[in-house]
Length: 257
Image (cartoon, rainbow, N blue to C red):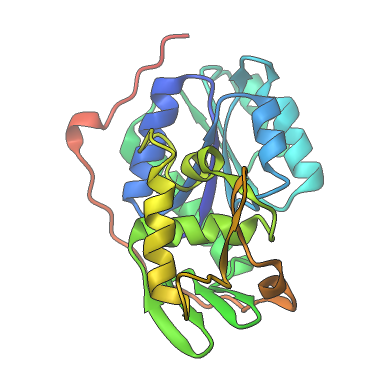
């Protein structure tokens, strides 16, 4: 079950991967970037509910990105920072942060803060379904309905379809799909072909002549743009509480600055 979409912008690749892995295990859809430029470029294609943001990034001050997000997007922002004086924390909140977590921190505390923020976002405006005309994506039960027929998908298939839907009919390369659907999990772009074939067998009337998942020659794949007409989002309802269980052996993170 997907609990929401989270964007991680963290300069430390080890910490970035660790946070992403734990968030995915907890049921969130995750995208990861290591710089301000990469994060800004991705925001044209995704609408994260929460941005986990490092205050010190290789190409600039993370608080500047925080202010940019606050001014232009409706997502919540969790700042991660080795700067833990009262003055610096206050500056973080003044830049638009909804929460501020000082490094090093415990993984269970991090996940608890994320859960609290996402609960706030979910009650306010997060969708339960994405409605693209005849194609409906159920974000709660992670299944798809097309022309009145429900299809149960594997986690990999669902993530792939979700990323293609968010691209709004624009073609994405295999490498882009690989990174967005399963960041840091698989390094062979041809894996996308296997999952596209599997998806087509489930949701296409004739997989040999696909109408939903289209191949774009010399580029990659896209979702048929005609399906994206009359886009609508269903209203949220209060979801059940989710209980988390995590490995105590990785409960503390130490970051070398």
